Image (cartoon, rainbow, N blue to C red; front, side, top):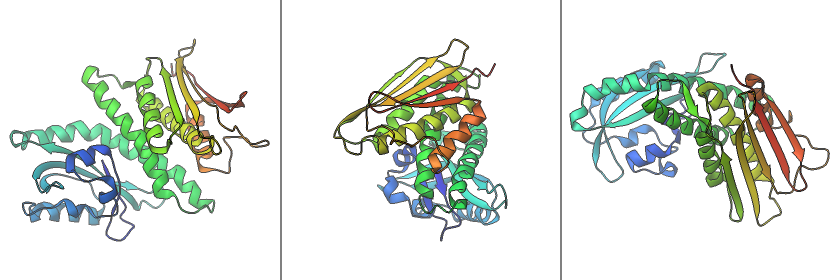
Length: 314
């Protein structure tokens, strides 16, 4: 998955996932800031590039198979679907999302159609989920807070990327629109530990196997991501070591409970979270409201304990 920003000069890449790095051989640090044309090679057909350019200029969706070039100079066939993400209010294109897969020689034509069918639903979800995150982040600029938009967006997309991987795996075994929540949240916790972790701070994850609707999972995943990130960034400011624990269990009414605790410095006296002052707190409140979920934040003997209760959708 690739995300570009057409409102910046030359529509540069602002986010790529790990699958992009594996497919192209380019690290995110190299790709971000460049226009996608850096993937073109001598075998990239001009007619294909013209189709992409015209679609982007018009803010339209396009699906195509074209030849690109990896970082080592090796060429590869790439099935590509590009779709605009629009502002809710102005209908202006805010971002373009690109979904890609490699085509082998025997897959030409046939697999492009399969790819279009396969990604149709995920592409729809990508657009809806990105729009939801963008609307939350947009609150930040309206309230006068500056900067951080790209980092805010990129970190939250990581949670979505893991969800889509879990969706793909689930669809191989079942046609139900459900995913294994424990597995997904475990991967979210590992990603946060990798991105925001530091030496001496451990992450312990204990999750029960339970399945939930995908739309519930995306909101729960974003909430857990915000809470874990907050703990990693603020709980251990003056400590050389620490522990963050995530526990996920099924409740008696068929819902789920996620408990996140740390043995850090704890909330300052007189400070409540989530609050209306920070972006993360506002996002968590909005997501909880959408789930009819309750969030309890308490001070432990050491550190902070956050408990998220999500009722059964049935």
